[in-house]
Amino acid sequence: MTDKKKHETLKKHLEQRRDDLRATMAKNAADGREVGEETSQDIADRATSSYTKEFLFTQSANDRNLLQMVEGALVRMNEGTYGECISCGNEINPKRLEAVPWTRHCIACQEKLEKGELEAAG
Image (cartoon, rainbow, N blue to C red; front, side):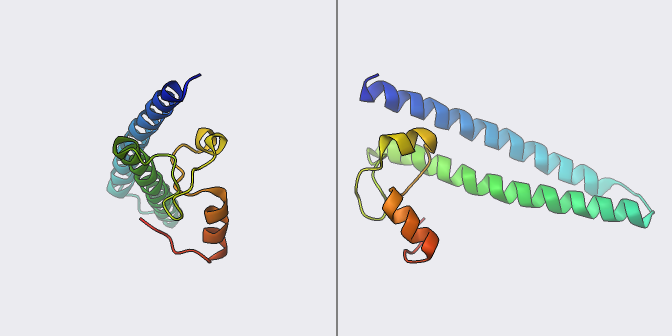
């Protein structure tokens, strides 16, 4: 497969992931509103409702973070900087991009980031 074909395949994958995340987030928001509208009086029902809302909120926050990374990858594709580490500028291994197409860092910088040796960039 040529680099251009790989690039297009990754772009389509990112666009599909973006659309899926947006749909999931909309569903979670609707589900969260429904949980909030329930008028249960039982303390166990209220605890369950509270847990469900907290779960949906956490899931939504995770989805938002992933959506930002996916959208960032699409922006980098449009700018022509996709596949370059945002910290050091080195090329990100193509296998890494296939596994995690929204990644922003090469392996070395990702390891530094996880150890707290590198500032997280937007």
